[in-house]
Amino acid sequence: MIFCRTAAVMLVMYIGTANAQQVDEPARQPYQMVRSLQMLQDQIARGDLEAHNAQPALLKRIGDSFLKTDSELWKEPRNARAAVTFLLSGGSPQVLASLRARNVMNIDESTVDGAIAYVEGRIDEAKAKLGHIKPRSLPATLGAEIALVQSALIAQEDPKAAIALLDDVRLMMPGTLVEEAALRREIFIVGQDDDFDKFEALATRYFRRFRHSIYAGNFRQRFALSVARFSFAQRPDRFPRLVAVLDHLDRSSQRGLYLLIARTALVRGKTSMAALAAERAFVLSDESSPERLRAQLYHAAARVVTQGHSQAIAELEKIDKSKLSERDAELQAAALSIGLNVRKALPEAAKGSSDTGPKTVMRPRIDFTRSMAVVDHAQKLLDQSQDQLKEKMR
Image (cartoon, rainbow, N blue to C red):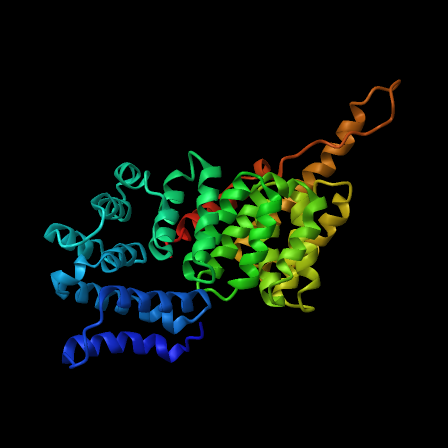
């Protein structure tokens, strides 16, 4: 559905005018107001910043209108369902609680109570109230929202069931912000389940359809953490498939994501992935640009514990730390220290070999993530940033 940016703001103005001026046209029913909200939110999934900025005002207007809506209208099931959808789409729980107290809505009470409990963080109660509901037995708009909630409630204890629910969400509400949210969640769950094939398919779908979403930047941060964290990151043979996924993004977005993947993989000790991602970032960077310098840093740092450690040390020493961010300067210092320790360890390993045995020199195995306290500090910073970037339902 084509929906221009100006219309996003006009939705708020329309509802505000209708409330303030009490025009002679028939009052809009709750389900119609929620439909307008969903139209606005779908524009957010397409990257409309004005729609995103207009959303709080529209939610407030709808909530105020609901409290003034005639009790007779709440006897209409589609209006009652709209009230729950409103809540799960970012609306105020106080509005639904007020309607619940008035006992005016024609809807299963456990659905209302469960939705309020979920939004207010009473997880056990939400599970008890919503767990028995079959989302597919409901109209798609509400069914998808309930399935999204159910998946969040069981994601830790039953990832496969959560994935199945999110698959249903995507089928029920394609092309909407609801699908966008389901994709974001499902990608990380299948990553934790180490299902690379599905991870690849879902990530491709997300980048192809929702790369302009207001929430895409947040998603990319978590995507990079996922790529570096999950065990498939230890399989360099899969890297070309990751490249194919990221090819759906523009050059700048690819470069930023490869740099983020490289640094995250490096701090987590996954040097092969770090080197591959840094190489891609280097190719996508302009000569003498800060991005190319970072790519050189990450690539060299990833190689200080390999057979090419001497060359890596030389490359690290050439990098002007004054041109690096504070965190990258710390990483450079840590990588140099590790590389020098490797160089010292090799002769010692050679001395320790038997005079009568094979003359093979064994390179000591050094864990990059444990060799320097500064690297541990970098890891903490990454984890903190992930916590700060955790999203709301939308």
